Length: 268
Length: 291
Image (tube, rainbow over all chains, first blue to last red; front, top):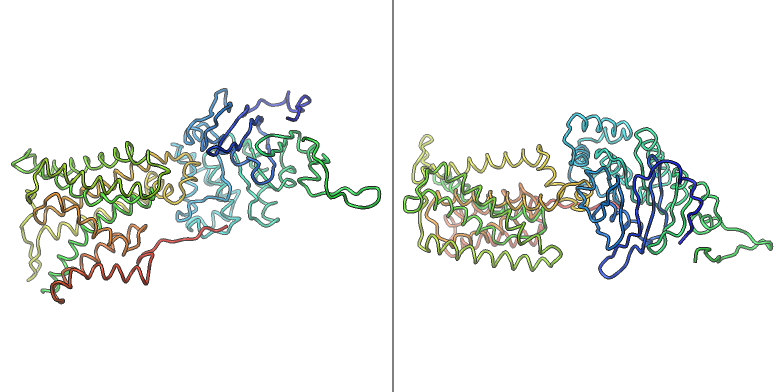
């Protein structure tokens, strides 16, 4: 495991979410092998990693769709490991799943209403719907249209907007860039950043697109094969040689002017 | 005149088929399970109403027996899902099919034990009366069936599109995982769908029993309703009703115009043609997910 002795955020804001030594299984296969991380209040925290690193499983475990075999998930001073998904939503953690997952035959507005399913304050719901429409004006235009007929980018906006309707304290965003054009990816991440600053939503973003994620995030974790292998402030991760080589595709040239094709990871 | 009377009686039959088919589709859409006991749900609903209201049994007033029977079948549906079907999650579709077929046999047997296997008529205030529109003589029972089905259809439409729980039922059937993520209690929603299917079956049963006597094997009507659901488009609620009405209308006209023996074939011939030329049914609700 990476040593975290000089965690620059240790004395900053309190952790909203603390994951401690989580182990999750798909049947006999161990997808998360003792994972620990902290998400601090008001931050955007990103979890990077390749396919199959366990990022999505980690999110599912936090949101209660999967139950961990071991470990604790501390949220608001309480261990929520193994809690049911609807309870986790009521506690203020909303998971925006990978691949949009909208309700295809419901209208945009009905999708947003479903995001507020656990709430019982019609006035607040109406205000939040206007708030969502102000961030995503295209959704307001299409409010009577079936969600399945939206484009991929619009569906992603709807998925995020629907998540906001739960008025989350902590939002888990799984691969918001999946399948989107580079321009749309920038746009989505700009909105994520604005939501974080303006609405005070703490965000945990799982991404394969390391560059764009680290640019908006405050803090980053790198996950490989079910473990956290690096953790640092985003800027330092962006500057790190390993991250540049393995996640940003920057290649160093040797003295002879040739590219080295293989470099050993320092954490193994 | 003959044609109009055939039409009305076919339509009334079709409404009953349609309501049973609606129960099939409700459960299938929400949980991807097919409840082959849906016809027996209808039978049981009819018998509960009959047991409550007929003089030889409990003799309660008809208008008290009807809501009680509907509620009882709702409870049966809810408990069945909560106690049995929910625990079969993750097993193959076949397991649930076999389970519900077996359940159908059990319900038929129980009904036979309690109310006997001889046909009995429901003592209903609408049975055997006539209404006249001009020169047209129609059975009050048939007119009632059509009107009640219309009212129920409108009520269900409003429920599924205007109420939070109704929209949540749609949401859970369209994307179960996303429904979990939104904090919709999907398991309870599934049980409520089973309850709704049970209640609709009870309405169908009471309407059916108002037209003539019933015995515990009338649940086999469910097979015809299943065909109706497939014709209309399994997975579409309006399709289920439409399929029911089509099957109901074909029957009397076929027996009127086509030689006996061939006429009973017609609904199934239509089913065959639909499966060949429009395999998703008339009102198919198919969509491809965008990647």
